Amino acid sequence: MPSEPAYPPEEQPRYKLRWLLTMPRTDPPIARDCMTARLPWPTRLARQIAPHTRLQDCCWPHGIDWRQASAAAFAIARQVNREHITDEDELAERAFDLIRAVGLPEQQQEAVETLLSHADGITLDHLAGDRWRLSCMNGRKRTHAMLEVGVHRTVVIRWRAPRR
Ligand SMILES: [Zn+2]
Image 1: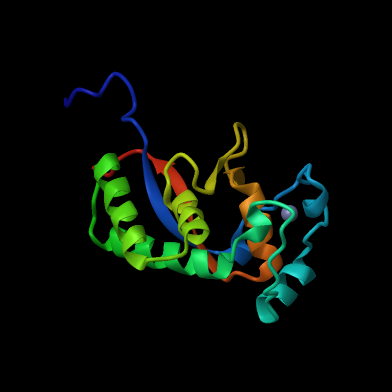
Image 2: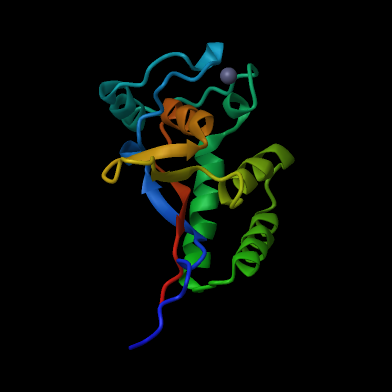
């Protein structure tokens, strides 16, 4: 009989490509004046069809062109996923090299970095006791801002046990 490891293998970050419309709700409301507006389904859909392009100077997430940042992060995540890099540090290094190669303005580059950083990325996971529904563990403000401007697809981080 093969011996079982004493502890489950350590989880590793993976980039997952995701349609914004399938993101978990960002409730409870975000405690920030510019983000208290709820985004019910009809609003989410309307913004997908007629995206907003306005940038606001009220806060960092509202000052980012998320359609550009998300598109760049999406392309990089897809490329890195195709390369089947399993080592966590190697994965981050490769992603950050690719980000720099895009040559975005500083604030936009920073936004792409937050999406592809294992520590800062929009992280989806199951809350304890909720096996079926995913929750937004990190990145609610960015998700909210993306939904407002009508971003179609983005990158999220999922932590999973390594593939065998
Ligand atoms: Zn704001």
